[in-house]
Image (cartoon, rainbow, N blue to C red; front, side, top):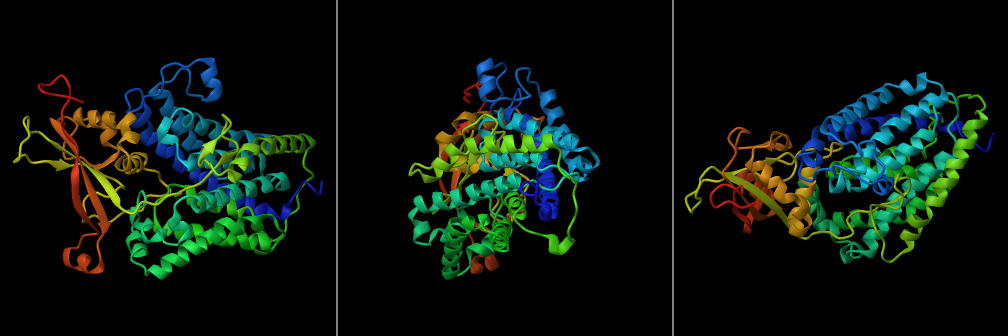
Length: 476
């Protein structure tokens, strides 16, 4: 079985599995704390009450057809417990088949949320954690050496992730080809972090070097993953370094950390930990891994063809189990940052003298004096969607009115998603309104003079004073 086993990657497998367990824990915690407000029975986009068998086959989920808020909470917290057990190494205490079943459980649970969470779970890192999570099932535990076919599939996932992101940029916004996108990106990205302003204020020649290095790492280096060591390991190290740069410069949920975890599987870490001897893998395990590898390669046809297409789609899956997907990000870069500011008042008849109070979100910019925070790998779904809402009101139409309605009713689950509400749940506002501002980072001189991190300029009223229908003069 020398062709099947790669014992020199035993430590790489261990590091990957523990990193994945941490990210599973974060993903399930995000779901446990947010799903009810977003897609619960009274959420902004409620999960369908019932589905047909054909619909279930297209989007299989343990939450359907008998969905309830209690069931979703139970599944989310169960996912947290399973992730914590995997992080503690429970898979190493089980026989091989038991470890595989233990890794299957969080994958199946999280697939259930992705397939029922609608637009709130439409991000690329949702697909990536499912693809990586399924491959983790096949990696086994310390009872067997890491299987080479699965290690190569992990590199194939990393290749599609990086190369797809590189192609979507090269084919998309011309500023990527002109090396000028990063003049704007650090300021206009969905959720800046505490160091984003410093990155934005770097000299423009550094931004051009950033863009050029991005093209090299995403369009050239991925091919080296399939070369012998130490070249493949060096390619993985370049990718890890790039991802750490992105971690420092913004908040992209668990995307960067999961990319790092995938890259670790291409590293030969035996010089750090020494060789290990493993027993011959059982025949049933070899058959399962080979059959799964053949199936995943067959499913790779459409994602691979998508890479070569001039109509390249990003962050898309072609199979209901989300096993082999396409990825990509920032094919276009905004030059101007717009933000929606939501305000409320208890004035029954708003006028020029009305005092409006702003709701503050946890991650997205609001108060100009508040420094951006680091939240990744935790994912603030509402904050991300507010960024899209500022870009396109039509994109936000399915959920934004529901969000405003829940502010007007003082919905506790919704208010828990916010950093600060000026109105307690028992005394909601009579009216809310939405203002559109243009935001930019302050210069060094402005920062010294005002202490603000942002400078904002009023653009227009996006949505006028709105109250619940049923109250006099109301509309929602």
